[in-house]
Length: 213
Image (cartoon, rainbow, N blue to C red; front, side, top):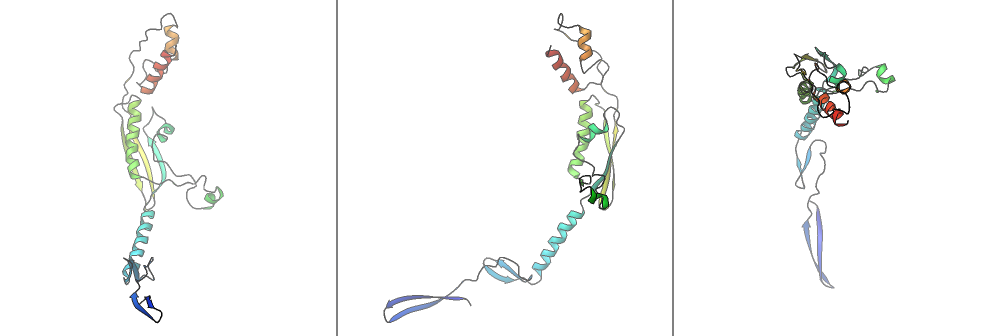
């Protein structure tokens, strides 16, 4: 037992001393997988602490291995909106062309080989993002399906789009600009025209053009 002495001098010829047990030092680490700090006392844990550490490490490694790399991402059925616009409108993105380990990955210093991992939540939201983009562009009946091909460490994603018929502009009336600019010249410069799908952004841009006269 660890001890310390406490002495009190009563006179020049005698002193009263007592031995007080010293508290055990608090352990701050697992020693050899057999001792664990608990309330300032060292208690044996046998192999349980070591097994707990191993299990935690394996769980973290398995979680890392379950992350799927997005190897390919494509769109089918889209005609009104191009692939580039769709790609920058969603969160899921494709890994670089040299993302696989190899000589080319080393030669490019990883600049062309950045890995992109699948986020299941954002992937589901991407379907809604594409739908909102189409509806904003006048395609209120658009539908979006997904094709997903998984492997142990990678995933290939495809968005299958059914655009449907858009809502089109039947007529466009401009008032208040008489005597300032001809109706024909004004209509020719507007982003939104009769017969076009009713795109909300083009509609707002057309309104700004008229107000700027």
